[in-house]
Length: 374
Image 1 (tube, rainbow, N blue to C red):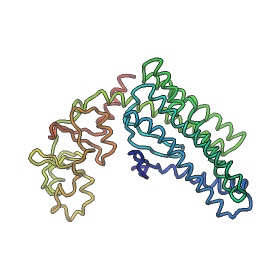
Image 2 (cartoon, rainbow, N blue to C red):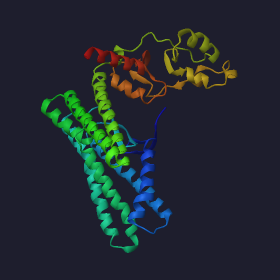
Image 3 (cartoon, helix red, strand yellow):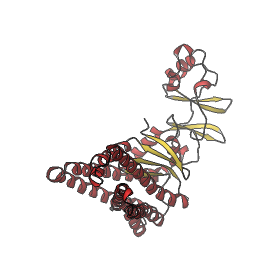
Image 4 (cartoon, rainbow, N blue to C red):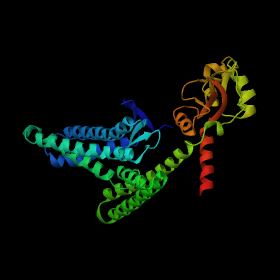
């Protein structure tokens, strides 16, 4: 199940919100509305505090988005496509189609986000100074005061030298430039990230017992997040490097079983799904590829209509995310697999079907090569 939903498209990049982001949105809104703003601006109507709290949380969302857009703008300007930006509980991440081509680009991309956060901190500091000059607006200066703190905190936290934080990416770029080895640089920077995560979790447990419960919990959660992100990012880099060196035709399943356009669902089940026990079948007629039909597509149709409903009526029609040329690399195939609903891509040569590749095929190959290299 998709844990994010698309919000807008900016600079041609889909911006998604992970459902976990609403946790931080609620916590920030509640903390500001109930504790912070009543202390900094007493004697206001409680509804005003909630309006201020929600407005601050929304502005924080905008600041995090601008932080990620800064990374993405540098990448796109240097011909490195960004597939999407996702905002989640601890910030955001820009999903790149590939690793940066050189360490200089990595350095510029990594530095862009914290720089924007620092600039935003300075902007909101100026807003605060302006609002304090007007007595009637001083309560709203609390919003910009807090956004100064938040943006500076985002900049400082992201500059910690632990991959995949921005500071870790800066560290990786410097090691990469010195050694010429991206994989080694990523491993070292990821280990720094894990070390930083251990320090944060240790500090969190200490704070949990000796200082402050809430602060301790946040440090532990941040440490766990960073630990998982460091390991995941390193494995993703290894997978991308491996997949970009293998062509689709080298692992595709050949002699694909196809079904005709006009076959009804009763016959489709009996003659194909029950016989071959595949999860899906390409729909082909006279060497023309029309789509792919899955068992899920059939289940969505009323059983009483299976005898009069054909494969062409329920299939997923052919689109760019469903087909790939046999000379393409597996990284391109994985990108298409992540954006289509059937978990398979149909491999073609001169427009004709010659094979099929599933997400499971690619993951099995990666696990096999991982086992050899260990």
